[in-house]
Length: 286
Image (cartoon, rainbow, N blue to C red; front, side):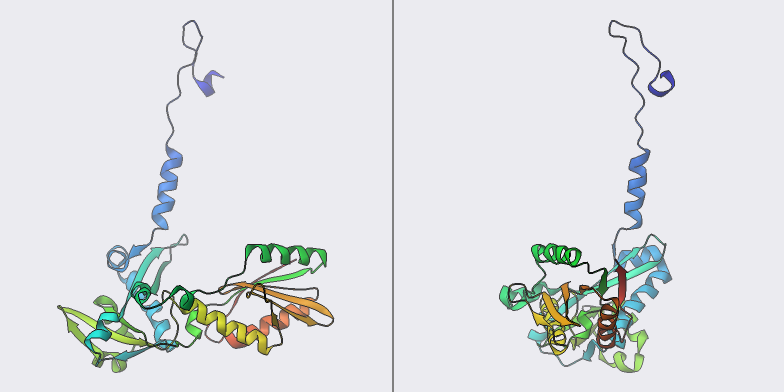
């Protein structure tokens, strides 16, 4: 007892001496937080050097390979003023890999986009719980959770949206395809700027989630699924006399049916439509 709590001290109440405080757990938490902290592109490049540059290049290369952007030069003053900034963040993952994430800064769109024009349905928590209860009750012993990679970039943009890449980001974009992008780089306030038009929906734009919901809903209806009139992120179809249910939140889908082959076939169909650029992330269980 004395070794654990300290020696007794004299006095009326026979109290033990207070143990010295141990802050080691706080240092561990701080270290973990530092490892997973996201940095701005400027700070990230300073911290990670060439690894940071390569991570940004990989992220921008997605925009190029998927034909998400098209370079533009002769923009009006109003078009330049309305152009969205492209934000880039860099972090060191727990596996020590340096990862960059980019997104459009869609705040400017709020000026001329109503909530009704940008709101995307998502599955209600009640619907999700009820479908899980049905899965258990009907002994649907096969479940699959599917994540569609780069979902927004697989949907055409339905309105004219311009975006600007500045400074080092514009330079890195030129490295990807100098013949295509170099001629469109201009100088504004002493910085290199590359204006592009969004041809595909991009994370950060206000309507991206809605556009993908429309695309996924349309595809499920083509395959014969019926959208629940009370929750537009629940779809059902009778297959082999049993109900197959798909519920989804943005680009994450839960698929259930009593037969594993049915779930596998649906995953193959999804992969054929949405997995051309990168494979779907699939988690299966019982």
